[in-house]
Amino acid sequence: DVKVTQSSRYLVKRTGEKVFLECVQDMDHENMFWYRQDPGLGLRLIYFSYDVKMKEKGDIPEGYSVSREKKERFSLILESASTNQTSMYLCASRPSIGGRGREQFFGPGTRLTVL
Amino acid sequence: GEDVEQSLFLSVREGDSSVINCTYTDSSSTYLYWYKQEPGAGLQLLTYIFSNMDMKQDQRLTVLLNKKDKHLSLRIADTQTGDSAIYFCAESRNTGKLIFGQGTTLQVKP
Image 1 (spheres, one colour):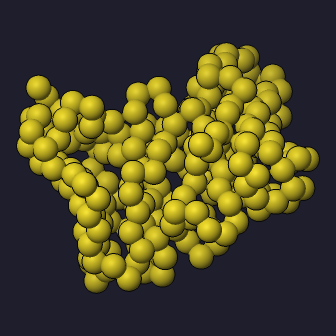
Image 2 (cartoon, one colour; image 1 turned 135 degrees about the horizontal axis):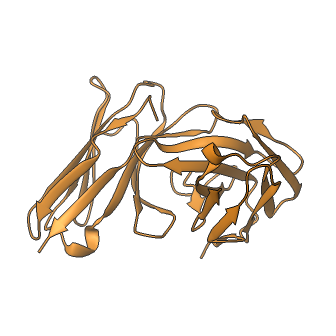
Image 3 (cartoon, chains in turn purple, yellow; image 1 turned 90 degrees about the vertical axis):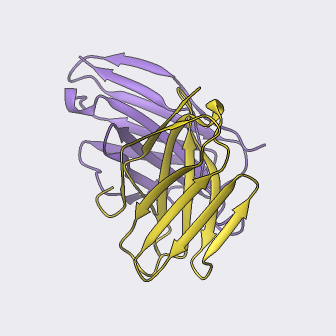
């Protein structure tokens, strides 16, 4: 079974703190994604990575950065957390070719609260 | 998810059929997906349909695709309480990105 794990299920941080959200996948997938999920807005893509050391901006990259130093790990960084970044963050991965209809595999999510 | 639209809520009785609808905008989308999110969990792929198909059936699930109207639907036959979840429609873009709808919360009453 594909497994995508996220470092924390729940996280509470203060405004201005630097926040790291970690995601690890164990299936040697090339592509990895970070989304945020907000009620009534669905999932919105923050950043994605096609391979190690590669990154592309998604639809809402402002206030975020990412790091992909190793194939299995994709980190989302909030340089200076703000209250409007309170959200559920979901990581996903998929192989670059093959798979069921280019399926993305999701982690359980990290619910981040910024006070 | 402004390019993919879904209604936000659907309530049905156990044993009835559920139909969740979705409209999308990109006619070049290769695949269209239905993902399910149970409370406190990430998303799981429920089913998908290739853009050159009109219908796909998988046990209790039927997906219908109307490319002319850019309309996708998911029908769940004999809905059970375990089907209560949020259902997301998504379309794939040529860039490899997925564009998700807002999600439809399905409530199944006993």
